[in-house]
Image (cartoon, rainbow, N blue to C red; front, side, top):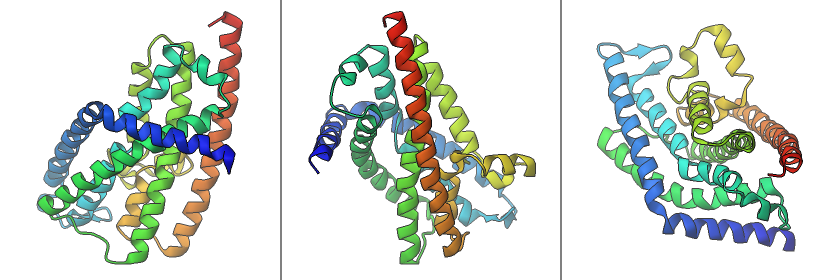
Length: 265
């Protein structure tokens, strides 16, 4: 238990830092809110005069957009850039001599910042639900499964962010890496367009990648589009992807550290 206390301390410290420097998060969130509003009216125009588009009604699409907003806002640009900044400014060297696992230390910091982010997102989501009259699930078990899927989505998104952030070891800037990561994640997760709207060959590829668990899967649970037995299988796959992303991060980190040692960085 003692070895976990240091990570709990990191979570607490990260939460305090996020509250202290909350302006960065609010700026990031404002951008996400503007994107949500633009997406909302774009899809409203798409559904004009139509009862259904694919398997979505306008009411269910509003729910999908809400989940996409929540998942895209959780683990904000502030949290993501914190990892890259440590590498770019050289402070990662101090982390390497501390009794921490670099991956779990960064994950702890992300969880800490996400606690404050989750509170703000909840308030913003309630305002959107009331204003836009977004229907909510009525089944308590659906809510439990949805919240579990959100936790898994956060960890998987962190795994993806961590891999891209490590590329900062071989670059002089992290902005391009973040933009590329955001573009790939938003497209492949269903954050921009539901995966069901993609061609079948593209769907088959995306359904074998981890991105769908960031937005598409939580949204399908929220909208009651999957059965309970299917949710169990999805959770097992998410756990598998969390382990795979962790192992990939471990391998890439060891390679990057070796290169830093060789070049004296």
